[in-house]
Image 1 (spheres, rainbow, N blue to C red):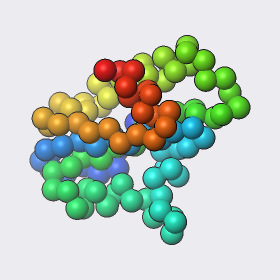
Image 2 (image 1 turned 90 degrees about the vertical axis):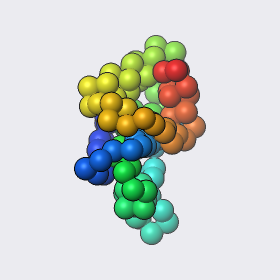
Image 3 (image 1 turned 60 degrees about the horizontal axis):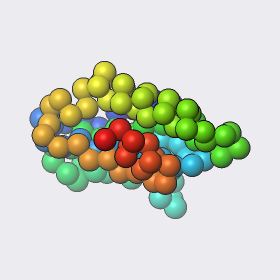
Length: 109
């Protein structure tokens, strides 16, 4: 449940969407509806040309969210995006974030 995982990849990529969960979340559980459906997968079917990703990291609240840990998570997110070519095949990358996930993504820019 850690790292960058591909959810959907079309033949022609126009836009990439990366979901980043928040505190006490995970890349597979945070983005489920009340019925347990993993709704980011639906975007790939609904938005033509969209490549969908989820990113997971250890966001346990009982661990100290020190600045060093946040910087480490930010560096790993950026490194995995580069390694897996996020943004390379498309003009647009959109991050969908919840709580701490937004802070991580904002730290990248």
